[in-house]
Length: 124
Length: 124
Image (cartoon, rainbow over all chains, first blue to last red; front, side, top):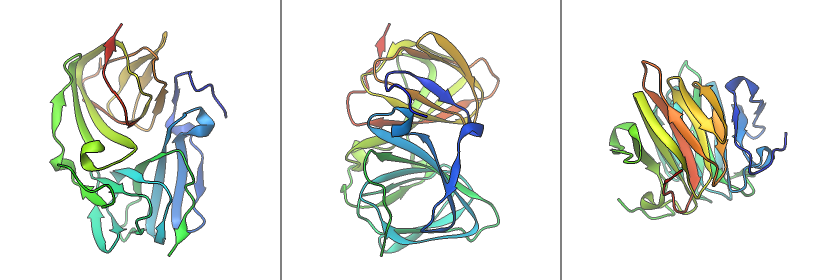
């Protein structure tokens, strides 16, 4: 789908396609609003972390701003781990090493907003 | 709070300060991550719409990318109204007239991601 960048629209939750994140184990990503949907400057994505999911230490070239929707999972930021739960938000600057681990029984989910740019994962 | 733009951090839900949006009736806004928290390019905010809330027709100079967290409420986009519920997402380009109305009994809430820039509301 490619939409005019000047047209507003609603995307229903059921429309979103999720794909496994290949560098991770048990993480899936769905783009809610982004360049392919006509958004010119930033994107919002929804990620899920199934119970037992692990995402290895990595960096990205763009900053992440995240909001926790569901579950209770561990996020590593630089050299420290935090257990996060719904309502928490996180700032992960470009280039900062981070990782995830869902030790819980419940699926974790979060929103991740990013500026346009290369979101490639670089493992460290 | 002003933080180094290169430091990652977690903000807990209970830390977020909400202020009433003066141009609206029953809408409050809390900045989760933004320029004051050291984020250089974009911001994520959480808004609440109490039962009966109304936000008049207005425009903003920056685009909005929103994700519905709670409640069921009406969003007007350009010339059409949509009833949205949790899991829906919305793209509201800069300059597009939009409005909100919570006719339900439950508080509405949504995440709104924006690029840095003037977020002033212009009533129409």
